[in-house]
Length: 432
Image (cartoon, rainbow, N blue to C red; front, side, top):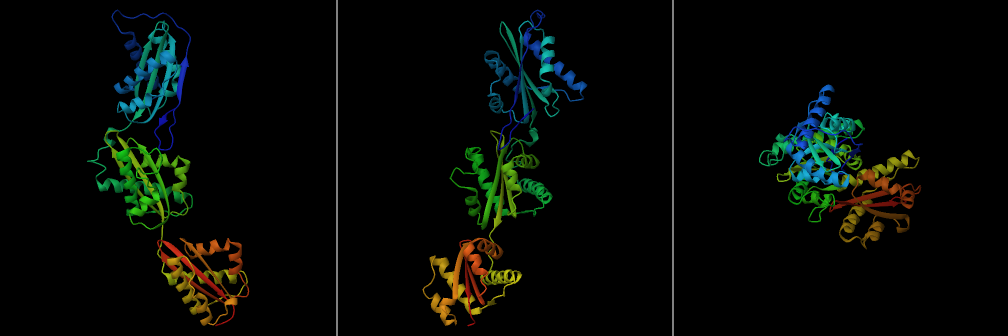
């Protein structure tokens, strides 16, 4: 078993084993019984690992110090204290994964007896090939000997947080972003999704939140900045115009694009962001806190807002309406230039005032239509023409309007304001 430091969850399982009393020990005069136990346990565990063709454990002082402290608590309370992982961080021991095990035996036990019990009870720990360093803590009273083991897969010290070497070098930032992008796109393609492109503004949005975490630590409320900002706020600050935004964050103790992606991929919520069907662009950045040796990764996904020209948008919407009508056996509508102009003027007015202009109906009459033979509608949205039509077809009354058999002409206008499309559509009977 192992404990992995993941952004979204901590998996921590202890193995506590209590055995029956054993035989009376014998020690060399002047020797420390605890040292004898530690030496014998380490040798016994490494003998087993050698037989299993696993590299031997290396005794690490930081692990041993924390294990010794925890063994005292184990002796008193007969349980492994849940503070050992915090103690490791305080000791500045950083790791990818770790496991802890404990054995309590009679104070009469010899080192060989203790080793046999440890090997048998903690086999899952010593059989884990990823764990290479170990700490062994021994505590003893008149009745019992408490043995506590902590084994870990340490962080490569060459990848620890050094801003002068890593964070401030743009090439490293870009390399990390491109690696995560590659892994993200490989996963998306396997799922039949469109690959993403890297956007420098989204990289900057990711860096903004990374700097916040670097100064203030990993957030208690994920994705909320200390200034109260949310992901879309930070994206907006960069000047990026968006329809939608998603964000993944995490903290780890080494610089690893592959490791960061792996953490996100094995978290359902973060995996859902990676496989978001609507997103088309991505940004990534990392920052690090040298005092804590903590790396903060931020991955931002977005759907960009496309500033389509008003004429193109209106013409495409009208064309899509006619394609739908013809598919359903209805007559295509004439795209009336006069109605198009009225719709365009009306959409511009609505974008500014949120109401229809008083002159609209007069303009329709001047165009040759009776006001009784005309229907006008409008919506505000961020979607493209096809999305606008899909939305209207989901509304019963508006879908009936679009499919009306008596209509002969159509006019459409669109105005863009504050990253929003203001769409106006006019259906009319008769010919002007």
